[in-house]
Image (tube, rainbow, N blue to C red; front, top):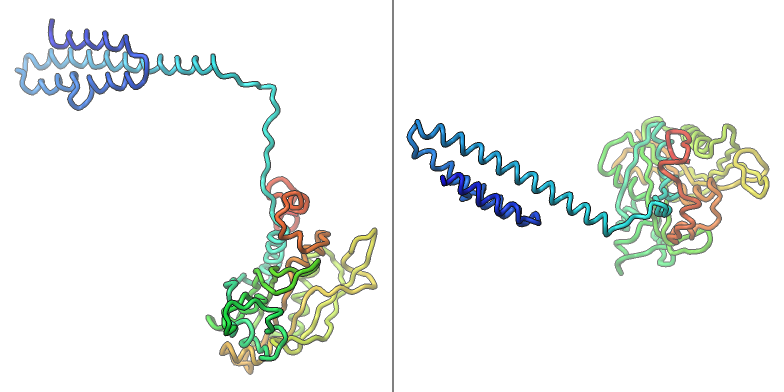
Length: 355
C-alpha cells in the first residue's frame, strides 16, 4: 500500500468517529496543518524525478480534494445535528404577545431650544456656548454690574470660592463677553444654556435654562430690536397677530432697558397668546450699555447694538401648558411620556421640528 493510500485509509477511520467540531478541527490540523500529512506529501514533490512528479502530484491533488470535501460534509452534518438537538429541547411559543417596546422622548426644554435656535438662525443669528463655571468678571463686572448690586449677594449667587472669583453663572450673558473679547464686530449670536440662582418654588429652580441674544453692528437701533422680537414671538407661538409692548425697566448692561409684554386672554381656562386685555411679561431687553462695549474693547462711538434674554423653561411652560417648573427636573418618565416629543412618529410643524 502506497503512502497516499495509507493516508486515505487513516483519514476515513478518523473522520467516521468524529462527533464535534473540535474533533473535526483536530483532524483538519493533523492532515492539512503546517506539518500535516498531506502537507508533507506536497513537500516531497521537489525530490521526485520529473516523470514521477506529474503522476504523484495528480494522485495527491485528488486525495486532497476528496479529504477536503469529506471535512466540509462532516462539518455540515455536525451543524445540522446541533440545530436538530436545539429544536428538540427548545420551544418557542409563537402565541405569546410581543415584548413591550419603549423609545425615548425629546424633553420639552430641548425641544424649545431647538425651536428658538431655528427661528433666530433664519434671521442670521448663530449659536454660541460657554462654560457653566464662570469668573466674577465675566458674569458681573464686564457687564457693568455695580459692586453693591443685589445680584452679587450670596443669597442669589452660587460662589465656588471664598474670594468670590469663581461662580456658577447666573445668566448666559458671560458668553456674550467671551464672544466679543475673542472676535471683532459685527456680532450676531444667541446663547442658550443652563444658569444657576439660589431660588426654588413653583416658578423658580436653582438650575434653569436661559437664552440670550446679542446683535452688535454700526447701525443697529431699538427699531431693529423690536422687529427682531416681533418676528420671534409670532413664529414661536405660531400666531399671525400678537400685541406686544415695551415697558421701561433697568438692567446694568443695557441702556435704555425694557421688559417685553405680550397680550393674551383666557379661554376655557387656557392662556391664548395674541389679542386680549391681559399682559404677560416674557423677556427683558435693551440697547447694549456703552460701558459693556468698552469692557470688551469695542468702540461705542462706532458700534452699538441690542441684547435680550428669556427663560427657556418658562416659554416651554407657556407654549405647552406645563404649570410647574419643578417637574422639568424630576426625571418622571410618566411626565416625560406625556409632555415629551416623539422624534419619529409625531407630525412636524414648521422647519421640520417635532411638535
